[in-house]
Structures are given as C-alpha cells and as structure tokens.
Length: 423
Ligand SMILES: Cc1cc2nc3c(=O)[nH]c(=O)nc-3n(C[C@H](O)[C@H](O)[C@H](O)COP(=O)(O)OP(=O)(O)OC[C@H]3O[C@@H](n4cnc5c(N)ncnc54)[C@H](O)[C@@H]3O)c2cc1C
Image (cartoon, rainbow, N blue to C red; front, side, top):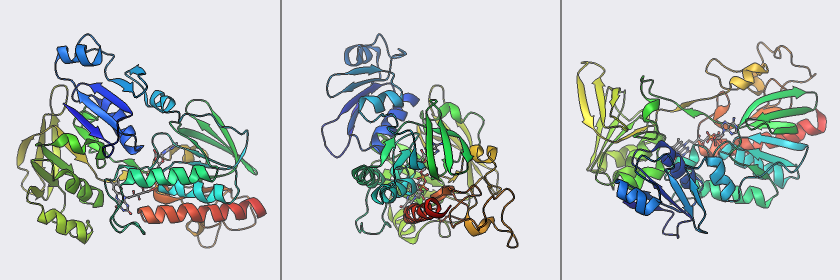
C-alpha cells in the first residue's frame, strides 16, 4: 500500500516500513507538519521488505527505510538525521543574540517575525517541527484573513518563510532543557549541549498533549494511539473504524477530517453533549456527517493488541457498562499540560498547573514577587525573571487560540524592546 502526502507534489521522501511502526509514524508526522511531500509505502510481507526496501525481512531493525529524491537512503533515521538531510539543521551563527525564542508554534513564529523585522538579532529554537499544535490541525477556519481556512502546516510554513526573510535564525530539532539568568543576560542549554546566550528570551513552548493515563498507553504510541488530530494519518484510515477522544475543537476537527475516508468515526466524550465544549460550526457539521456517532458519558478504559492497537474498551461513566471496539486507530485530543519543570528549577513563578505566571498576575496585594530585583513592576507578559517573557499557551491565563498566541508573540517583542532599552 502506498499513500502520498503533499497535495500531489512529487514526493521528496519515500518511507518504507511495517504497519504500526512508531518510528515511521514519527517521520510521517514530522514531514507532514513540515509541509514536505512524502510517500508512505506500507510493507506487509517479507518479500515486500526485500524487494522494495532492500532489507532481509519485515521485522528487520533497519526499517523504516527513507529514500530521498536524490537517491540517498537512510535506515531507521532519527528526526535530526532527516532534518540534516533536508538541509535544515544548523548551528547558531552568533555567540550572543538580542532575543532567544523557545518553541516555534504560532506564538514563537510570530515573535520571530516581529523580533527580526524590528532589527533584533533573533534566534528561534524548536525541538521538533515548526507549527506546534497548530501545525497538526488539518484546517484552521477561524484565523483572521483565511475565509476558506488554512491547514496548520501551511500557515506554519508561511510564517517560517516570513521569519527567515527578516533574518531570524531557526534551529530545528533542538530542545531547550535548562536556563540560567544573570543581570542582562540569559543562557539556554539545549539537549545536545549547545549553549544559546541572549539578552532577552521568550518562552513559547505551548503544551504537551495530555495522555489518557492507561497503564500500557505508551506501548501503543504511534502504533494505533495518536495524540492530537493526526493530520498525517488521515489518508491511511480509509475504510476503517476510527475513535477520537475529546470534546474540544481539536477533537471536532479531527473527527470531520477522518469522516470522508473512514467507514465510521466514533467521537468519545466524557460529558453529556458537545454543545458546551465545541464551537457551534463544528457541532453542526459533526451531527450532519452520516458516518459519525457521538458516544457520551464514556471513558476509554483499556487498550489491547499484540504489536499494535487492535482493541479499545470503552466504559460508560454512569452504568459502568463496558463495550469493546476493534480498531487500529485511536486519536486522543484531550488538551495538554505545559512542561515547565525547567522554570521551577530556576525559580520562575508558575501556577499550580505549571503555566508561567506573567505581568500583573505576579503581583499580590500590590507586592512584587520575592527575588524580583528591579524598581518597577514586571511588564505585561514578563515572567518573574526580568527579560524572560512568556507568550501563547504556556502562559497562565492565555486564551488557547492561534490568533491569541500570534498576538502575544508580537506583544512580547514590544516588551522585549522596552526591557532592552530601559531594563
Ligand atoms: C489539533 C488542533 C487543532 C486546533 N485548531 C485550532 C483552530 O482551528 N483555531 C485556533 O484558534 N486554535 C486551534 N488550536 C489551538 C492552537 O493551535 C494553539 O492555541 C496554538 O498552537 C498555541 O500556540 P503556541 O505557540 O502557544 O504553542 P504550541 O502550538 O503548543 O507550540 C509550542 C512549540 O514549542 C515547542 N517546544 C516545546 N518545548 C520545547 C523546548 N523545550 N525546546 C524547544 N521547543 C519546544 C513544541 O514542539 C511546539 O512546536 C488547535 C489545536 C490543536 C491541537
């Protein structure tokens, strides 16, 4: 079976792998979010593995194999190797920047566009693909200026191009893991040992998808269980029964994206109805789709299957009654949590859920946070460390929308200027 992604453009990469391969999923997801056309060739017999991928058998550890348009072959590649092959992996060009931005979702990309266009030496660090959560959306319909909607991957790619055109440096496949701050300077340490020194920083690291909390869940990640809308997988669900968990807009979008190809889509929600959690335009479309059912007051109780997901057990919240569904496709869209442990380690104030607290929210009865060293209040969007700002979903009290993340990215840059000028 071969499936193409990328609007009919000739594939830049062909991926050969076995069904349920988590590594192959990670590669498809990365390429899809990066708007790179690829072809996925699913191998199901030893003979196919030999003749098409040039390995000994289907269980060969060299799978998945990626073949690039120039003939380069990489066996079982990491995301970093793919980034390198695409020519996107780079080292920082400066020993010091005016602004370092962590996270290239809508907030980080917007901050990069505004920072670089306003003359700041700007670096944007992203641990995976550009676009963040938005990059996984099949169609964003409420973002200003796109009346017919735009795919998250395309929106992100446009923003990347814009940021680069203004001179922002983008470091992909690099994860910020630790920070150190001293007066007028911050140092970010990346997972690969690289150090980024900057006079100011914006944390735009968004949220991590929330897990269901089932004991064997990680086993199936990328092998039947997917987090977010799984835009890269949509073409593969042809004729299948797909389960989507969650009552928010991302779950609604995912459901509608799968419905035209799937045999049936079951949207599983904990509440009584979708009305209070889903935008009305999505509610209307979900109920109009003939092959979509909404299963209310229900949780996912168990996952089963040998090498990949084969069975999902649902449990009704009121009756306790269980039912089993045979499926290879479970998409979990139940929101996310910020991963800001690093901030706690350096004393940046977070709320109980881990979101970064900024600006006026840091003041208690007019008092500035303990250890705040300056004779002024924190600027709006500034964290409890001067010169370190937060924008988008990672920020306490943020709105969790593309447009607001983009707006906060732009606003944070305005405060960065103020900080660099006046301290
Ligand atoms: C499927 C889906 C559909 C959606 N549809 C819509 C919609 O139609 N309309 C709408 O308005 N909103 C929509 N949203 C919500 C919207 O996408 C988010 O509110 C928005 O993406 C938040 O942007 P952000 O930049 O703050 O964070 P994110 O988008 O979460 O981006 C954060 C980025 O930071 C990176 N990162 C995290 N930690 C590190 C680190 N340590 N080092 C380096 N990089 C790091 C992540 O990899 C990620 O790329 C949708 C969300 C989802 C999941």
